[in-house]
Structures are given as C-alpha cells and as structure tokens.
Length: 345
Image (tube, rainbow, N blue to C red; front, top):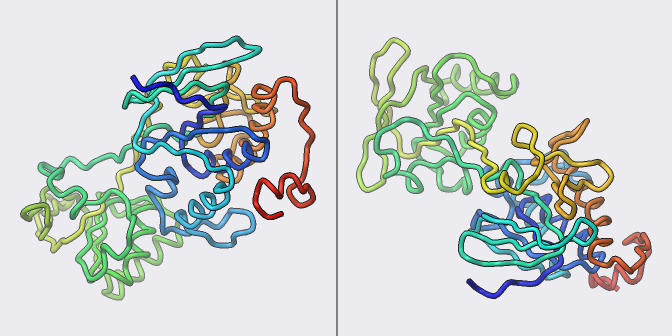
C-alpha cells in the first residue's frame, strides 16, 4: 500500500461538475485531488458526446461536450489539481467526528488518500454501455464496433450501421450522414423515442434515397481480425438480409451502477444520494454530492445546476477545512486577491 496522499478534498468524478468544483474550492484555498474511472477528464460529456453541441451552458450559445471540458480544464489550471485517471474509489473509511470529519479513501489500484471532506460528483455512477446480444461482438469492439462517437473522422467514407431508436441513435444518424459513405439505421420497430424533428429529418433522408432504414435487429457480424465487412439483419418478417457494414454503433443505452459508493453508509433513494439544498451535504457529515448523482425536491439534471451545487458545497467545505477562519464572500470581478489566485492580476 502506497503512503496516503494528504489533501483537503477528494472529488470522485472528473466530469464538468467535478471540474468546476475544483475552481470554486481553489478560490477558497482548498486543495483537492480528483479520481475518475475513465482514462481522461470530462465524464459523460467526453465519453458519450464529445462532438455533440450543448446549448444550455450560460454564456455559450453552442459548445461541444469536449469543448466545455477543455474550457473547464483551462479554468482550473491556476489551482494545479491532481487528477487520477483509470481508478475507481472502492473503499471509504470515516476517521473523524461529525464536527471535524476526516476520511481515508482507497482506490482499486491500492492508492490511499486522507482528506477532510469528500465530494461525490460521479454522475450516474460507473456507467457501461448495454451491448447487443450478438455472438463474437467483442472481437470487433474498439476497431469496428463503437458504443460512442468520440472522433467523427473515424466514420468518414465508411458504411455505417447505427442501431437504436432513441435520441443518440437519431442524432448520430444525422450528424454522421454528411461524412459516411452510407448510413443504415436499424431499429426493431418503425417507431422512435427520439425528438420528432430528428425523426422527421431522418425520414426525409430515407425518402430521398440518401440513407437506409431497416426494421429488425442485427443478428450476426461478418469480418476478420476485428474489421467488419457486413452485418446480418433479422427482419420483422424473420427474413435475413446482409448489409454492407464497416462500422457498427449500437445505442442500447447505459447501465448505471453506483458501485462501491452504495456501501458508504449514505441514505440512498433509487440509487441517488439525497442532499440538503443549503450546502448539498449528505447524511454523513463531510460527504457532499453534486450533479446528476444527487437528489432533492425540485432537482433538475442539468450541468448548470451542478455548477450551482458545487459553489454552495465549497462554501461549507471551507468551514471544515478552516474551522477557525472566517470566510468573507468576494466577487472575482472586484477582488484583487481572487484575481491574483487566477493569475489575472
């Protein structure tokens, strides 16, 4: 076991909300380490829709998921946080008291942290894509079969088969259509759960002969060494058809699991963590939950709401970290001390 890293706060989850919490804590001279099971920062934004536009971030009429993450990473640079990628927090031990909490956090690679507070910003928890029941699909994963679109260029001039009937399937059908050699959308029925305007746009492309819509399900894949050449479609009438296929993108949703967080003694409500709305603290003093993983009356699962939650949590955390220090609220627009921390003064 490596020697424990000493810090003020451990943030579990390096998505947009966890990253912004670093900024709010940094303004208050609170040190933190971030831990994320993914190999890079950004959480679901970077993992599931890095190139998909987001329209409801204040001050950004249109920003991609990856663009938002990049901006947040730049914003927290002055505070030099340490991010630990590819690690899962598997154990938490309460060391202190409710009045003066402290914790020991351990990850699955044997790293240990000792901290005064913990922020859970883990989104929906540990998430994994639901895989279609196709024999041998594992051999193609990461080469020809993808469960998320990370680089649109990977699909340029390819025969792409997209499977699903929700927003992700329809959005990427429309977004990849200009790049792909041919798009085929496969869904088990001719009825979609996606936004009506997306469905209408897809049907217009089909009617114009610019893409294909197949009703049924993919039963088998053809190819060698992880490189797809075709897919077998089992139609609604039980007939089988071969479809040219160089890339397959199944959008069957995600399986969200709290994982070890569910064993921390937190009062859970349908796999969500209840918090108060004053400081977004859980039933365990010193443990906070912000973003999609928490719940409270009126909760909205929006990134901008998670930013607000992180700001208020930071105010309470300052009292735990500096119990004898009075916190004076300041604005970054007028405080020379805050501007100095940000390197703009």
